[in-house]
Length: 217
Image 1 (cartoon, rainbow, N blue to C red):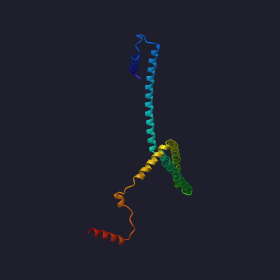
Image 2 (cartoon, one colour):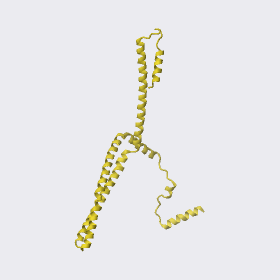
Image 3 (spheres, rainbow, N blue to C red):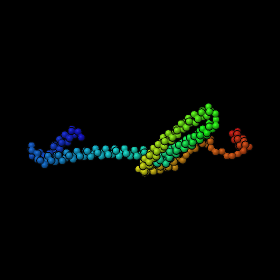
Image 4 (cartoon, helix red, strand yellow):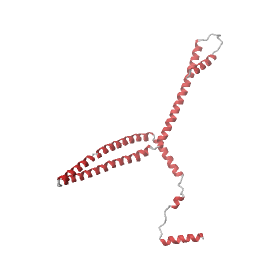
């Protein structure tokens, strides 16, 4: 609170003092002025604090609504498990492919023993290069495992959000269901043009076409 406001309030309280005592003011009157001034200050501070709390409550409410509209339960139940499963599938596929490549390299290495020295040397060099290149699987597998672990951590946090905002999420679910129920889908021209057709032979189809042209005549 600014000093100007304090000075103004103090002046107002002093002006209200009774003048029956002349130029003298009793101690109890001064004490009353101080009490009233402090009460005014407290009231203003309480009001300011109340407004701050009110704005904070509105902000929290809006944040809760935004988080609930994102549907963290849907992210937790569908998107995150799907992403983790896809990454696990990538790890398994690369592992299987690497094992197949290594098995083929071992076969080539065994066959190199029966080949001429110059051919055997080249085959051994090729198999060594294959072994070295296949180390990529360990690196990618480790990195993808870290991503899967991070997704599981995110899933745990989102689960906590879904629990905290359960009521808001349920309200949004009901609202969406009510909107779908209240607004039946209207068929468009595209739906009518691309709708299902009855099974009929060529003769029947031609008869219907001829009948349609006869009606137009």
